[in-house]
Image 1 (cartoon, rainbow, N blue to C red):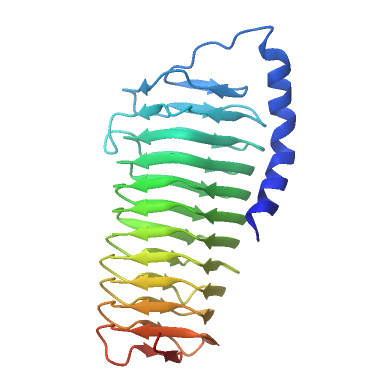
Image 2 (image 1 turned 120 degrees about the vertical axis):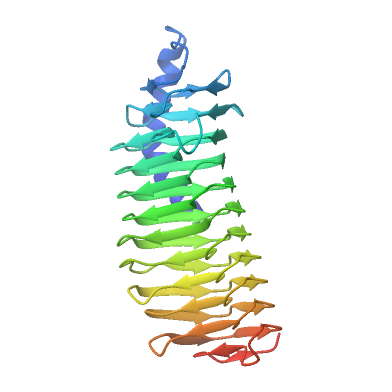
Length: 300
């Protein structure tokens, strides 16, 4: 599932709405965006927002809307007091949320029951969750920076046919997690560092998840964890290093191929009997002298 394929699909959904906005924008100026605004046309922020309320700061209220924060920030009352999101899109199609900072909310950005939607170039920090996508399809979460969130950096739940790529997650409690019967989600080319729990995790009935070309390092637990209640997870070409547990701990009907595990506190790779060894895995310097269990690892 390539980035270019997602861009083409998402572009078709978004262009119509954006074009209409450009056509009418000259005739009527958009009202100023304030905390609590419902965005019904493509909009660019012109100032930072500091929102004292505990609910959502901005809500996407129409399909085919581009919300460009233009480098501005949306700041909430704090991850504890807030019960809302910095930006929320629910039951929408063709939405893009991009280019700014969101902090101090329960969720930085929420995309719920939404289709053909992009979250990109968002810096989400000091929220409970940085970015949450749930119950949608054809979602692209790309090139975001997520740090110091009290829960997940990115949580994908119950969503299908989606791409999570080129995000950088640093010092969050959880890293990038895919769960709740999500299917055909590709998590690729992300960098996850310093999580308190697993850097990447797949669990709760997922099907056909791909974890590839990610770098996971310096977490306190496993680098990558795939639970027994998952089906058909592909774990390939990842680098896991200096994690406090295993580099990769995989169960379920997973396939492991061409991963590199170095200097993790326990095993480089731990795989249960139902895991398929796809070959090409390598490990060195891990705390357990066996280096790998359940798959064959060579020395890099």
